[in-house]
Length: 414
Image (cartoon, rainbow, N blue to C red; front, side, top):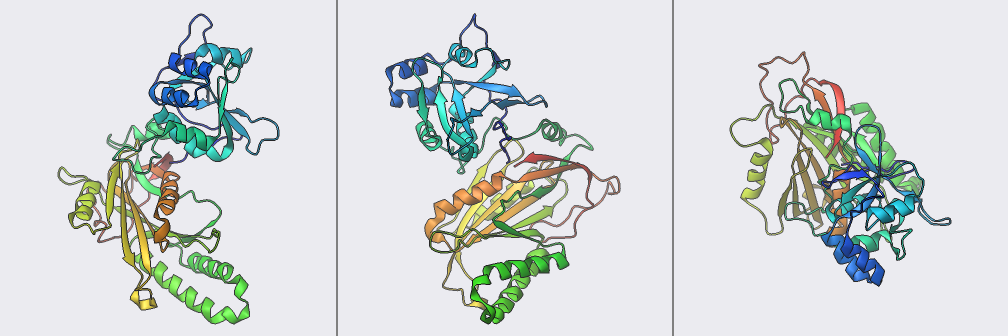
């Protein structure tokens, strides 16, 4: 899922609580939060934030969905924004003064925690009742710890925002048509990876080889001319791996090129796409995959399912060892697969991660979870060129040829 901050304000749609405009004749909010602030009791403030709704100033971003209004951080701050929350509409009104934008929404921690998690790098601080008699300031990490969000059993990532943060009005409309004849459905998925990921386009052979050469050159730059045999061997191995991934339905691979504190972090991901056609019977394609994966779990396997606004996904974690072909049989590997059901339930995407860093499993999971939540569905209507009686394609274990690409793409985040 993507929820990127704008140059001036982080964006997130409204939660399940009501919204309105500041009315000086009435006052809504959390009396418990106001009392805790007045007492200067940070623990009580945390309890109030966990139990009550808080007043959040919002703006209309033009597509009918509200946007959290962030404010400039104090001069000299390391980060550009601060998030201002309020115990009541009265304290919000005092803070806004004569500002023309006076809309607000009431939000609970289930909406606030994912928002601050996504935008923590841009937030210098979180301030409650900035213009009130008893303001209180927290760092972003401290504020998240105060909320102490417990991930539900079906959402081990802890990142899902049930308020639909990041889904545009256009995508929401498209998602609303997936059950209609001729409506939108998922036709692809886009990985929005940061610059420190090197991407290999598997379905573009010439480009694929150029990208592999560039990755090998970059990763062996410090070895000098004597590394030529190593470069050749690495290229050949990467090309072999890419060929196998492409033959199995892979669309793209990516390698993390971010150096760690003591050694380069090794993490790669392959994106697979499976067009499966309309569902047959009462079980969805994803449910059949879930049943298959859960039939014979290994001792270290973990299989969980999360429901999101744009469809469910599975996270499958398991431990294995490297390939004997390259002498890696003694190298432990952590494999993390995400199976996501595309809107329209006719396709399934799989993000398959692999890393030898078994000892930092939790850190790697946080990284792979964020990669998943930055992906976007590409939505389109069925192609007019596709026959109505076209047979469904083989399942994930038997990849087949790609379907004609529907037109009119839209986007919605996973």
